[in-house]
Amino acid sequence: TPGTGLTKGFKMAALGTTNFTLDGNYVKNVVTLGLTKSDLSSTSGFTFSQLISYPQDGYPPVINSSITYDSKTISSYILFDTGTEPYNYIEDKNATSSFFLPTSSTVQVAATSGFNYNFTVTSSDYLTYVENPKTSGVDISIFSLEYFLNNEIMMDYADHKLGLKND
Image (cartoon, rainbow, N blue to C red):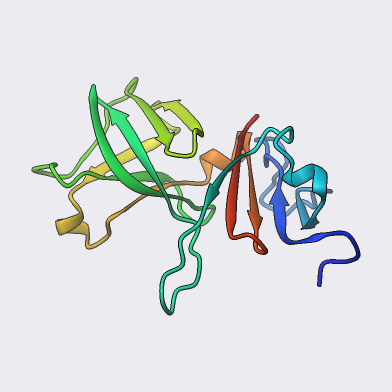
């Protein structure tokens, strides 16, 4: 129970790029447990995606989207994952081989909910690997820790929604 007047869930603020050290660093208010009516309102800046229930898996935070890279657009389920670093993984069922996107490549993600996320691959950031799900054994594209450095995420456990917000 998150507390009186709060909805079950959490909100994670943008992590930033200067908040962390190898020694560890406490960053106040990065994660908020329990959601307010204001958090869940249409004016919060979050775009909400309804999650789908899968037998024995519950409501994983996987949403449907299109991904555009190298002037090619594909449909893919996506997951934003803080535990995946340093690469993003685009699962393209038409990829004939696995490869890294070259520096200066742009990637555009457009979720069916209306959420958009874009980035440009550099030599050290947003490194992105394209692979065929038949080879990888996974059919979900994963966007890594770098999303969380400058953007927010929210999970509404009561209504099974994922909220994403560009900062």
